[in-house]
Image 1 (spheres, rainbow, N blue to C red):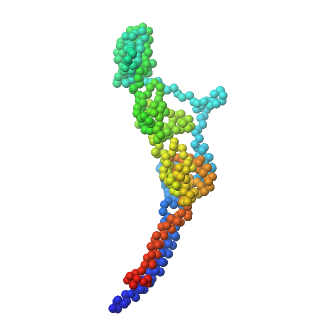
Image 2 (image 1 turned 120 degrees about the vertical axis):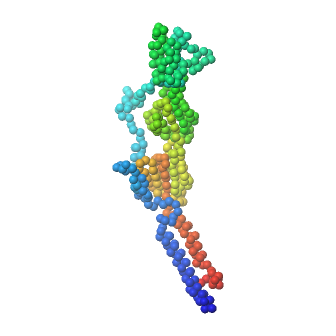
Image 3 (image 1 turned 180 degrees about the horizontal axis):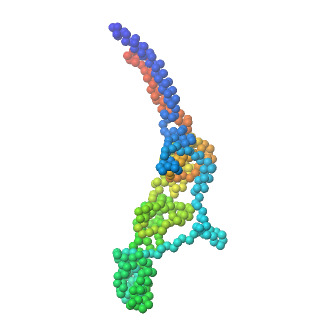
Length: 409
C-alpha cells in the first residue's frame, strides 16, 4: 500500500515539471533555430557568402601554374565599364597594310586569295579523249550514250588504255598534263595530233558531310574546288538545330573547329577552308549552347541559345523575368565556367534601368544565371519549417494523462 500511495506523489512531482520543461524546450528550440539563422536552416541556395567572391574554391588557371589550382574568384560588377570592355574585345581585328590594299578611291579592298590547285585525276574518274580528224580513235557518245558511258575510266592502279599508246599512268596528273602526254605518244603515228582531254565524271575524290545538314552523305570534289560552305550547301544547308559556329573538320587524323557564324557576322573568310579528299565535315547540334537560369525566377530551367546570341535581359525575359514576390533583384549573378579561369559577374537589378546594362551583357554557352532570394522570404521559410515543430511541442505540453485521472499535472 505504501508503494501505491508513494507512486502518485513522486509522479505528481515529475509531471508537474513537464509543462515548464516543454515550454522551456520550445523556447530553447526556437532560440537555437533563430540563432543559427538562415545559414543552416533555410531551404534552397544561399548567396550570402558571394557578395565579394565565390563562396567555394574553383579551379583557376594561374599564369605561372601548369595546372589549375583551387582559388576563390572575385566577382565583377556588371556596369558601363565592363560593357565597354566586352564590346571592345568582341570587335573583329582590323586588317593591316599587308592584308589589304587601297584602291584608287582610298577604300580598302579584300586581299587576293591564292588560286586553287588544279584537279588531279584519280582512280574511278572518267575521261573524255577526243582526237580531231581521227574518229577511229574517238569513241562517239552517240545519241543515247552519255559522256560517262562512252568515256575512258581510270583503273584502280591509276592507269588508262588508249590505242597506239597502250597503258598510260594518269593518276595524280591534270587533264592538261595528260593531253601533253598523249600528244607526245601519238606523235609517232599522227602528225600534228590535236587532242582534247576533258573530265566526264569526277568520282575519285570525295568528302563526307554529316551531322545537322538536310542531306548528309558524301560529296564529290570536282575541278571547281569545294569549300566548307559549298559542301554544306550541296548537303541541303544547315538544319534548325545546327550550330553554325561549331563545324568540325577532320583531316588526316586531326580535327579542327570551323566557325561559319563568324564568317557571316564578321566576314572571316579564312574560316571557309578548302576541302581535300577524305575530309569529314561534322556539323554539330546546338544542344551544347545552353544557358541555365536558377533561383527566384518564374520559370527556372535551361534555354538553348540561337546562334550564340543572347543577352542577360533576354534570358531573364525568356524565364518569365524575376519573381516579384520572392526575389531580391539587387543580387543577380552570372557564373561562367568555360575557359581556363572561371568568371563571376553581379548585376544590381534593383533599379529598372539596370536592364539596359543587362541587355548589353552578352551571354556565352553554359553560363549560369542565379537570382537571389529576398530576406523576408528567407525569414518566412525559416518560420514555415519551425512552426510544425513548435506546434507539436505545444500540443505535447498540453496533453492529458489518463494515469492521473485525466487531469493536467
